[in-house]
Image (cartoon, rainbow, N blue to C red; front, side, top):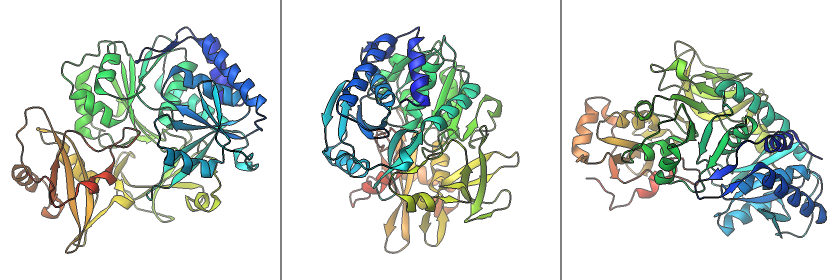
Length: 469
C-alpha cells in the first residue's frame, strides 16, 4: 500500500541528480535514501503495523528523515513528525492523541506503546498528522491527506518554477508543512536540497553562498540581515512564510540580492500557501498577502456575514487542499468551519485592488482603556524606525486599563535608541493610545520551535523589573 506522496518522493529519489545535503555535513544519494526507506518498510511490516496506523518519526532536519518518511508511507502507515529535541512531556501529550505504538529514528524502530491504535476513518489516505498548538497550548493533530498535498505541490510547481538546476536552502523543520512542501517540491523538480538541521544565522549565511532559492520565516531573514558581510551571489528567489512579512523587512531583503521575493500565506489546516504576493505585486504591494492561489476562495466576514470592501473582519478560506480534519476531535473540526470556509482567526481587510491585508489575530487584539488595537499595526510602524531591526507587541493585563501594550525592540548595530526618544517618535506618527507603555530592548525577538516570532512570549517579559530604557 502506498500513497501519492510516496510515489512522488520515490520517483524523485530514483531520478535524483543530486544528493540531499545538510549544512552539518551529512549527504545522502537518492539510492541510499531508497534503501533506507525499504529497511523501514520491512521493519514496520515485521512489527505488524496496520494500514493507516500512525507512526512517530524523529525529525532532526537530516537527509535521512526523508527516507524515513518514505518508508512509513510505503508501509501504508501515517507519519507523525516529532522534533528530535522535543521534551518527553511534549511527546507524551502527542502520543495520548496519536496512540502510536512506534517511534522511528532513521531506520531504528522503538516501541513506545503496547496496544494497536483503533481504526480511524479520518486516517484513510492520510500521509501526515502534524501537531500544532492552539491558543491554550494543547496540541491539535492536523490530518493531511496524500492526494490533497500532492495536488498542492502541483499548484506550487506552477507558481514558483523550481528548476532542476536550483539549489534550495531550507532551514525550515520537516515537522512543519512549510518545510515539508519546500523539500518535496525541490526533490520532485530534480533540484539540489540543502537542509539546515538547527537554524543559526551563521549556518544560513554559509548556505547562501551556493543557494539559488532560500525559504524561511521572516525572523530567520531578519537574523541573516543583521549578520555582517552577507553575500548571496547566485540567489534568484526568496520564499517567506509562516508569519507576517513586514514592509520594512521586505525592502531590506530586496537589498540582500536582486532576487524575487515570494510572500506566502497559509495555515497547516488549509494546506499552506493560500495567498501569494509575488514580484508582480511589488514594490507597492508590500504590506498585503496578495491574492489567493489556484482554486482557493476566501471571504472576510464577521461570523458568517461578509463585511463591506475595506472593512475589517476574519479571513476565512475555502480550499480543496485543506486538512482532512483534527485527529479524534470532530467537535473542533466542525467548529473550525462555517459553510465550508475555514476560520483562520486572522483579522484582515481587502484593499482597493482586491489584495488582502492582515491587521492582526482576533485573539491578539489589545483592549487598552476601551480602545481596540491590532498589535501588527504597531509592529509594522516600529519597524519603520531607522534604528530598529525588529519589533513585536502584545497586550499585558493591567488593573487600571484592562491591558497595556508591551513592545520587544531589537535595535540595529550601533543604535543608541531609548524609550523616551522612541515614544516621542511614535507620537508624531500614531495616536497616543497606540504607543506602547513598556519597551523591552532585547538582542532578538522571542520565538517558538519553528523559528516564528512568538507574540505570546512577550507577556512573559512583563515583570516589575522590565527594561524601560
